[in-house]
Image 1 (cartoon, rainbow, N blue to C red):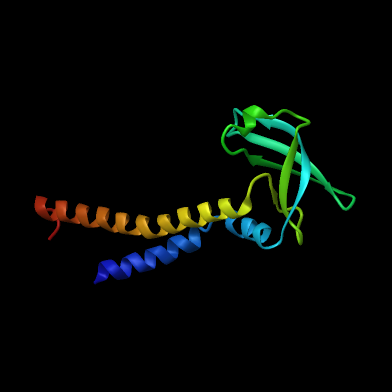
Image 2 (image 1 turned 180 degrees about the vertical axis):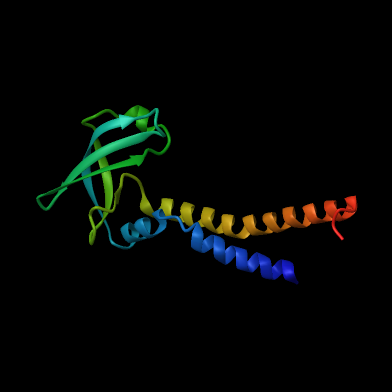
Length: 139
């Protein structure tokens, strides 16, 4: 029974401590989504496929740097047009890829982590205790 309680407590704790900051950001974009065309201002393919871009909206300029999906970084050059998804309420929240798909990937990964990491940690602790007991070191 203590294993289930420990798993539940650790899942909640992991959820609080490891909450990815990208989920609220992507959720805002997905809920208030608008699109516009931007311009690639540079690439940094050797640094996690980084793509730098800018776009203008209602007389304001916005810039961003995100990780490119797939081989996009190698296919584009500075000056290339790029579709930008942004939050109509907060245009500084923007991404050059589909925010809904990315949001689902983030949420699923986060949930798997919260569900699987605590039982794994409990299993490791229990295994160590059993080994010590078997060796006669734990009374």
